[in-house]
Image 1: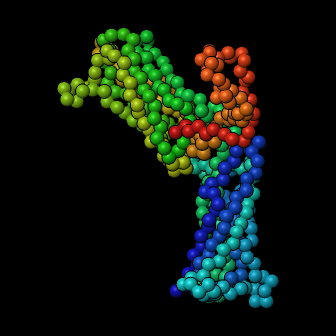
Image 2: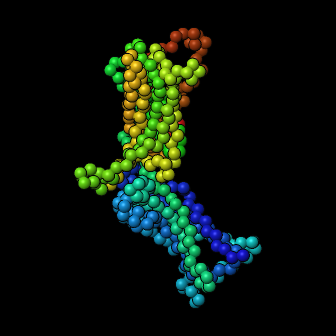
Image 3: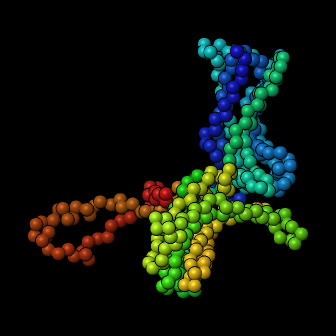
Length: 375
């Protein structure tokens, strides 16, 4: 049995850059490479690289990558040996297959472009291992692993705080109907569900409601490529949509009288990043904007249908960006006055407390934090 099985095991499944390219610090990517052999092998050299992936045509079409990234680290080199190779034996551990393991470390610059995959091209990164052998047959073995690079706002910056702003979208049509969309935050993580409360409120009588819809769209703008009119190339698509019919199917009615307020919770599935949706971003070369749109069909008194629409921008971010938002509370660390009430006599307990006589509690800053879940 002859085989070389290579496993790339990074300590983290992604690279997270915190802050803008000008303020983000470098991040360290560590891991190990594991080889399993089913037969003795003459090994000459082993390298691991962190690099951009994709054909040159894709990179030229995208024009979003500032430069090609190629960082290589030598894990094993037998050039100093007399034969120029080292024999790895398959039974050195007394098992069916031998295991050889090598650690690696890469320093990822903070200004590196985050991963993106659009119709204009892509910027992707991978870890690639090459093992060179000598002998008959195949003398080069390789294995690669895609590793996305995320960029999230730096903690405590206005950009990070805006991620937790509530979504309040409201408008009225000719003083007859009021549309409203409510949501806890303007941000939503990929590979999740986006839930929103939709309210349709009548301001006049004699109207009918046919349907209510909610959809999320994505617009990718290529800033460095323009058409013949000088406008940047852009691509628009609907990521997810939901349409709810309001009619009464039992009685065969296609609409219902809008005589009272209608409220409902609609949810949109958000696909996984880089496959069905991209993260919201704005770089010198490319911008990605997401818009949440509410639609409603209202029939007027003259039986004329009216198609109403309101929209607002939302942000698609990595889940880590929402989990990192927390509030620091100063801990109460002085308990010297907590025994005032317990140590008082029964006569004093019956008397009303005098707030002016109680000293204020002491607070201080510490490293402890209180996490707030935004899910």
